Length: 329
Ligand SMILES: Cc1cc2nc3c(=O)[nH]c(=O)nc-3n(C[C@H](O)[C@H](O)[C@H](O)COP(=O)(O)OP(=O)(O)OC[C@H]3O[C@@H](n4cnc5c(N)ncnc54)[C@H](O)[C@@H]3O)c2cc1C
Image 1: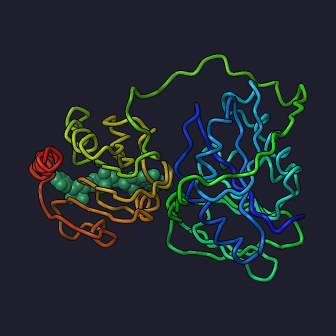
Image 2: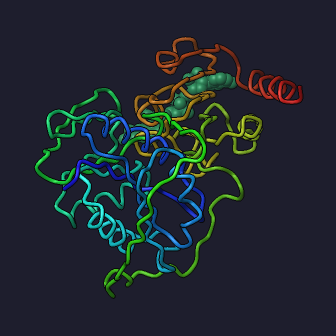
Image 3: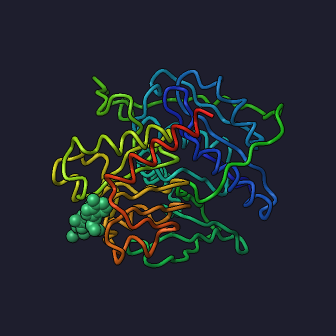
């Protein structure tokens, strides 16, 4: 086993998930302690085009696993591909983004390689030969520290925006190692017949660097238009509370919270959301939180960076209009 840290590069149709770049920075901090180097693994079809970008964020060696079977994510072939890259790289630590793909993949790879695994970490450091991670527990009420033994392979998935991305000077180069993949029939037994997009052109709530969320106070699906207008003006994504989703104002794919999605954007704007503990579990890790609520005692104000006690039906369109003016200048 080397002292290197291997980062799994999450990409879909040639577009790299920004969280990957954050993980390359986290890996850089760890290798400064382990004395190893930052390496990356890109899995997919036609991934050669992504190598330069990944090198630009500090990967010194990049393992590519390129195969038509890997054009779209499927757990078994991707797990086989990452395991093959890991056999070539022999890293001590593997970092994977905490996403649907990352969670799915990390657990399978950890089982195949008998590795220690920590999911959804927000802080990583090294103590002796152990990887020490912090991760939120009990809907974000506590942060717990875990120690992954240095005697075995250590895998951690890392929450989006726990680290910032740190691009290098342009022209950074990496050594490339093409990994040969031999898939078994078992690896290939699940086929994708059809992919149907659930939303047309609107960002998924986990993809937004800015998220504008609406609660029950919106009162109807039609009224969510003002939330979409603000999100679009900010190039952000739309989220919703469970009450808004249960009422049918938004699909449950947009639900933020304990039983919805966890988001950690740079900016989270909560409009007409009370701030129940289950909602906070999904967004309290956001860098800046703006709350708009008519009730000044609403719990959302306790976690908000900026609070606005006002009617959302007045404030949100005003905010959108002002931001549009700013963008025009
Ligand atoms: C096991 C379990 C899991 C759960 N999981 C989740 C989850 O994942 N996500 C989630 O969100 N919830 C979840 N919930 C539900 C949660 O407890 C709350 O019921 C829910 O978050 C409330 O949604 P809300 O804030 O939109 O609605 P409300 O509680 O009805 O709050 C509406 C808010 O809007 C304000 N308001 C009203 N009119 C206006 C106006 N015109 N302008 C501005 N503000 C206005 C009110 O003052 C109030 O604060 C879960 C509950 C349980 C028991």
